[in-house]
Image 1 (cartoon, one colour):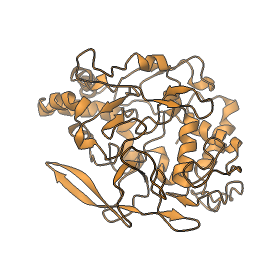
Image 2 (spheres, one colour):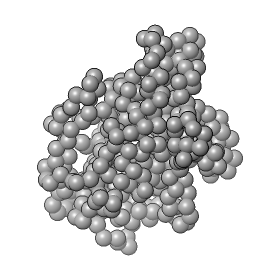
Image 3 (cartoon, rainbow, N blue to C red):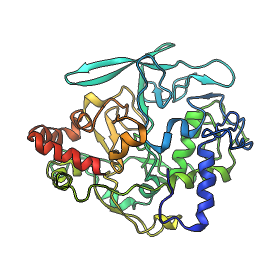
Image 4 (spheres, rainbow, N blue to C red):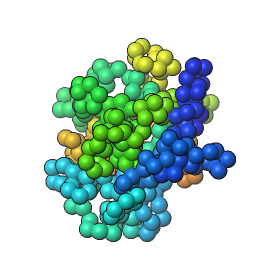
Length: 392
């Protein structure tokens, strides 16, 4: 929840203003950390008409990973994307299922109805209050730290890693998702979201405001909350502050650098093929608008590419050319802090994995070879790999 340690003094107040937006209820303007903070009147009344949650922090608690609800409870820290067989939005529902309203009739709600055993693993089962969508994809809220640094990675460096046809024969065919920049109309690398749908932090923030809370901005003037309108509910200044806050959150330092097990696990991570997708290191560009993000050596453990992860992790929804089985490689930095930040552990796009080991064992497709190599290891060596992941 802290600002990056190299944050300039001129951006400190911007960061704090953005933090206030992050913690504000867009319905009544209240601050969700306590009644001592007065209401943010500029944001009051911006919520809806249909929404998933009322504030950014309601899904992204402490900026960490959300956890699955108890069986029978609603998915209120998830996005349930819906569409037809081509991935196009569904009439009356749009592209996201929202069960809460400020006015009018609510959409169908999704809840966790139980867990289905898949060997020693478990897969979630869902129920809907209305008719179940024919095609949908359930996605849990991810952590927010490091997004500004991911935005600052040169596109050419990601392109150099892409191998859509597996030309090198390693069994891994990662590809860039190219999307439209809503501000310029240019085609850019998608970097954010489980399907790499947005190219910039501001676009991801605006999309979440629109899809998750029904809050209109100049970047997303009601794309999925009803007819487009001329008036914008969230002023550009507040959008810039919120974007700066998300961009400039600090990534916690790696721990356990003196741990022999963790250091052996780091070598093993590369040896069995995990680093083929979870690229350890990038150097950020010299040209990012935020000076704090320029020329930084970073260790995000992602290639920002889409990979087919096999049928076991596939949903039933195509999204913008991304197949139901394709997912952007999730960054691993700070993954070892999950239990401390979020109070428990849950991984993968829908939170099905209860441990880091389960997250490995679910992998197929591009991750199948690394999974098989992990299973072939003796128990003590598996422990070393997990120790390394917990040090991140």
